[in-house]
Length: 227
Image (tube, rainbow, N blue to C red; front, top):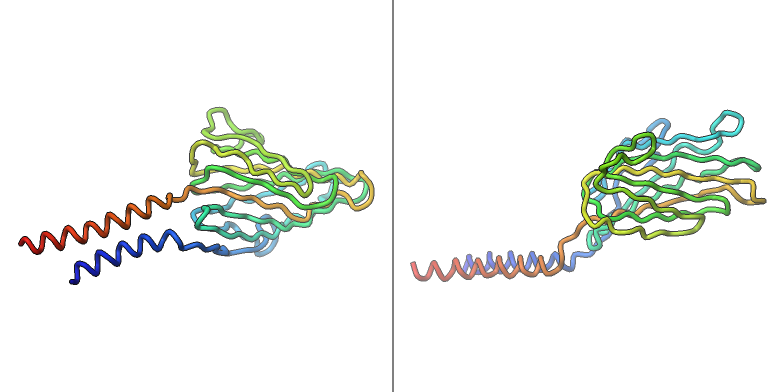
Protein backbone atom coordinates (compact mmCIF):
# COMPACT_ATOMS: atom_id res chain seq x y z
CA UNK A 1 0.00 0.00 0.00
CA UNK A 2 2.81 2.40 0.87
CA UNK A 3 4.51 1.90 -2.49
CA UNK A 4 1.23 2.49 -4.31
CA UNK A 5 0.71 5.78 -2.48
CA UNK A 6 4.26 6.96 -3.14
CA UNK A 7 4.07 6.15 -6.85
CA UNK A 8 0.69 7.84 -7.24
CA UNK A 9 1.79 10.96 -5.39
CA UNK A 10 4.88 11.34 -7.57
CA UNK A 11 2.72 11.09 -10.65
CA UNK A 12 0.24 13.65 -9.34
CA UNK A 13 3.04 16.07 -8.48
CA UNK A 14 4.40 15.87 -12.02
CA UNK A 15 0.97 16.38 -13.59
CA UNK A 16 0.22 19.28 -11.24
CA UNK A 17 3.29 21.11 -12.55
CA UNK A 18 1.52 21.52 -15.89
CA UNK A 19 -1.12 23.80 -14.44
CA UNK A 20 1.04 25.76 -12.00
CA UNK A 21 0.62 29.07 -13.81
CA UNK A 22 2.01 32.05 -11.96
CA UNK A 23 3.72 35.37 -12.47
CA UNK A 24 6.36 36.12 -9.87
CA UNK A 25 7.64 39.59 -9.01
CA UNK A 26 11.40 39.69 -8.56
CA UNK A 27 13.60 41.55 -6.10
CA UNK A 28 15.42 43.74 -5.58
CA UNK A 29 13.88 46.59 -7.53
CA UNK A 30 15.41 50.04 -7.60
CA UNK A 31 17.87 52.37 -9.28
CA UNK A 32 20.24 50.28 -11.36
CA UNK A 33 22.72 52.65 -12.95
CA UNK A 34 24.32 55.21 -10.65
CA UNK A 35 23.74 56.95 -7.36
CA UNK A 36 23.56 56.04 -3.70
CA UNK A 37 21.94 52.70 -3.05
CA UNK A 38 22.09 51.65 -6.71
CA UNK A 39 21.22 48.02 -7.32
CA UNK A 40 24.20 46.01 -8.54
CA UNK A 41 22.15 43.14 -9.92
CA UNK A 42 18.61 41.83 -10.32
CA UNK A 43 17.77 38.12 -10.12
CA UNK A 44 14.52 37.08 -11.80
CA UNK A 45 13.49 33.53 -12.64
CA UNK A 46 16.48 31.77 -14.22
CA UNK A 47 18.20 35.06 -15.16
CA UNK A 48 20.54 37.52 -13.47
CA UNK A 49 20.96 41.09 -14.76
CA UNK A 50 24.07 43.04 -13.79
CA UNK A 51 26.96 45.22 -15.08
CA UNK A 52 24.57 48.16 -15.58
CA UNK A 53 26.16 51.34 -16.92
CA UNK A 54 25.05 54.46 -18.78
CA UNK A 55 26.82 57.30 -20.58
CA UNK A 56 25.31 60.50 -21.98
CA UNK A 57 26.59 61.23 -25.48
CA UNK A 58 26.92 64.81 -26.85
CA UNK A 59 25.52 66.43 -23.67
CA UNK A 60 24.35 70.01 -24.16
CA UNK A 61 26.77 72.52 -22.63
CA UNK A 62 29.16 69.75 -21.62
CA UNK A 63 26.88 68.43 -18.87
CA UNK A 64 24.55 65.47 -18.66
CA UNK A 65 20.96 66.63 -19.03
CA UNK A 66 19.15 63.34 -18.58
CA UNK A 67 18.38 61.42 -15.43
CA UNK A 68 21.04 58.76 -14.93
CA UNK A 69 19.34 56.41 -12.49
CA UNK A 70 16.55 54.44 -14.18
CA UNK A 71 14.20 52.71 -11.78
CA UNK A 72 13.71 49.07 -12.72
CA UNK A 73 11.30 46.33 -11.75
CA UNK A 74 10.93 42.81 -13.08
CA UNK A 75 8.72 39.76 -13.08
CA UNK A 76 8.85 36.17 -14.33
CA UNK A 77 6.09 34.15 -15.99
CA UNK A 78 7.01 30.53 -15.29
CA UNK A 79 4.54 29.20 -17.89
CA UNK A 80 5.82 31.15 -20.90
CA UNK A 81 9.36 31.29 -19.50
CA UNK A 82 9.49 35.05 -20.14
CA UNK A 83 11.39 37.38 -17.82
CA UNK A 84 10.29 41.01 -18.08
CA UNK A 85 12.58 43.87 -17.11
CA UNK A 86 10.96 47.32 -17.04
CA UNK A 87 12.80 50.62 -16.69
CA UNK A 88 11.11 53.85 -15.64
CA UNK A 89 13.83 56.49 -16.13
CA UNK A 90 11.75 59.44 -17.36
CA UNK A 91 14.56 60.66 -19.62
CA UNK A 92 13.98 64.29 -20.66
CA UNK A 93 16.25 66.64 -22.60
CA UNK A 94 16.00 70.44 -22.77
CA UNK A 95 14.12 72.12 -25.66
CA UNK A 96 16.22 72.44 -28.80
CA UNK A 97 18.69 69.68 -27.86
CA UNK A 98 19.51 66.24 -29.22
CA UNK A 99 21.20 63.69 -26.97
CA UNK A 100 21.85 59.98 -26.76
CA UNK A 101 22.23 57.70 -23.78
CA UNK A 102 24.38 54.59 -24.16
CA UNK A 103 22.99 51.99 -21.78
CA UNK A 104 24.65 48.61 -21.14
CA UNK A 105 23.95 45.54 -19.04
CA UNK A 106 24.65 41.81 -19.01
CA UNK A 107 22.24 38.88 -18.78
CA UNK A 108 23.35 35.56 -17.30
CA UNK A 109 21.15 32.50 -17.82
CA UNK A 110 19.46 30.69 -20.72
CA UNK A 111 18.00 33.10 -23.31
CA UNK A 112 16.70 32.39 -26.83
CA UNK A 113 14.86 35.62 -27.77
CA UNK A 114 14.62 39.26 -26.70
CA UNK A 115 11.76 41.75 -27.22
CA UNK A 116 11.82 45.53 -26.80
CA UNK A 117 9.26 48.30 -26.31
CA UNK A 118 9.34 52.01 -25.44
CA UNK A 119 6.93 54.68 -24.22
CA UNK A 120 7.43 58.38 -24.64
CA UNK A 121 6.93 61.42 -26.84
CA UNK A 122 7.86 62.10 -30.46
CA UNK A 123 11.57 62.28 -31.16
CA UNK A 124 12.59 59.35 -28.97
CA UNK A 125 13.60 55.82 -29.81
CA UNK A 126 15.94 52.96 -28.97
CA UNK A 127 18.32 50.97 -31.12
CA UNK A 128 19.49 47.86 -29.32
CA UNK A 129 22.34 45.53 -30.15
CA UNK A 130 22.79 42.20 -28.38
CA UNK A 131 25.44 39.53 -28.59
CA UNK A 132 26.73 36.52 -26.68
CA UNK A 133 30.25 37.95 -26.32
CA UNK A 134 31.35 41.17 -24.65
CA UNK A 135 31.19 44.28 -26.84
CA UNK A 136 34.36 45.75 -28.31
CA UNK A 137 33.96 49.48 -28.95
CA UNK A 138 30.16 49.03 -28.82
CA UNK A 139 30.31 46.35 -31.52
CA UNK A 140 29.77 42.60 -31.25
CA UNK A 141 33.07 40.79 -31.81
CA UNK A 142 33.37 38.46 -34.78
CA UNK A 143 32.64 34.85 -33.91
CA UNK A 144 29.95 35.72 -31.38
CA UNK A 145 27.53 32.79 -31.14
CA UNK A 146 24.51 35.10 -31.27
CA UNK A 147 24.31 38.71 -32.44
CA UNK A 148 21.59 40.98 -33.73
CA UNK A 149 19.72 44.23 -33.27
CA UNK A 150 16.19 45.52 -32.75
CA UNK A 151 14.80 49.05 -32.83
CA UNK A 152 11.69 50.83 -31.58
CA UNK A 153 10.35 54.35 -31.77
CA UNK A 154 8.17 56.08 -29.23
CA UNK A 155 5.23 53.91 -28.11
CA UNK A 156 6.35 51.00 -30.25
CA UNK A 157 7.08 47.33 -29.57
CA UNK A 158 9.32 44.88 -31.40
CA UNK A 159 8.91 41.15 -30.63
CA UNK A 160 12.38 40.34 -31.86
CA UNK A 161 13.39 37.11 -33.61
CA UNK A 162 14.16 33.77 -31.94
CA UNK A 163 17.89 33.07 -31.88
CA UNK A 164 17.60 29.51 -33.11
CA UNK A 165 19.75 28.47 -30.19
CA UNK A 166 19.98 29.14 -26.46
CA UNK A 167 22.84 31.17 -25.02
CA UNK A 168 23.80 31.43 -21.36
CA UNK A 169 25.32 34.91 -21.49
CA UNK A 170 23.94 37.89 -23.37
CA UNK A 171 25.29 41.43 -23.55
CA UNK A 172 22.87 44.30 -24.21
CA UNK A 173 23.74 47.73 -25.64
CA UNK A 174 20.97 50.30 -26.06
CA UNK A 175 21.44 53.57 -27.91
CA UNK A 176 18.59 55.69 -26.51
CA UNK A 177 17.89 58.67 -28.79
CA UNK A 178 16.33 61.85 -27.36
CA UNK A 179 15.41 64.61 -29.83
CA UNK A 180 13.69 67.70 -28.45
CA UNK A 181 13.85 69.80 -31.64
CA UNK A 182 10.53 68.72 -33.15
CA UNK A 183 8.24 71.13 -31.32
CA UNK A 184 6.41 71.11 -28.02
CA UNK A 185 6.34 68.02 -25.80
CA UNK A 186 9.07 66.06 -27.56
CA UNK A 187 12.29 64.39 -26.48
CA UNK A 188 10.95 62.47 -23.47
CA UNK A 189 11.31 58.72 -22.90
CA UNK A 190 9.18 57.82 -19.90
CA UNK A 191 9.80 54.06 -19.84
CA UNK A 192 11.09 51.10 -21.79
CA UNK A 193 10.86 47.38 -21.24
CA UNK A 194 12.64 44.23 -22.28
CA UNK A 195 11.34 40.67 -22.42
CA UNK A 196 13.76 37.76 -22.31
CA UNK A 197 12.52 34.35 -23.45
CA UNK A 198 13.93 31.34 -21.61
CA UNK A 199 13.40 27.65 -22.45
CA UNK A 200 10.48 25.95 -20.71
CA UNK A 201 9.73 22.19 -20.59
CA UNK A 202 6.97 21.09 -22.96
CA UNK A 203 3.73 19.99 -21.22
CA UNK A 204 4.23 16.52 -22.72
CA UNK A 205 7.50 16.29 -20.82
CA UNK A 206 5.64 16.66 -17.53
CA UNK A 207 3.03 14.13 -18.65
CA UNK A 208 5.63 11.54 -19.55
CA UNK A 209 7.47 12.19 -16.30
CA UNK A 210 4.30 11.61 -14.30
CA UNK A 211 3.41 8.46 -16.22
CA UNK A 212 6.95 7.14 -15.81
CA UNK A 213 7.04 7.72 -12.08
CA UNK A 214 3.61 6.14 -11.66
CA UNK A 215 4.68 3.13 -13.72
CA UNK A 216 7.84 2.77 -11.69
CA UNK A 217 5.76 2.56 -8.54
CA UNK A 218 3.56 -0.17 -10.06
CA UNK A 219 6.58 -2.18 -11.18
CA UNK A 220 8.05 -2.05 -7.69
CA UNK A 221 4.76 -3.23 -6.26
CA UNK A 222 4.61 -6.16 -8.70
CA UNK A 223 8.19 -7.12 -7.94
CA UNK A 224 7.38 -7.08 -4.23
CA UNK A 225 4.50 -9.49 -4.75
CA UNK A 226 6.69 -11.92 -6.72
CA UNK A 227 9.29 -11.81 -3.97
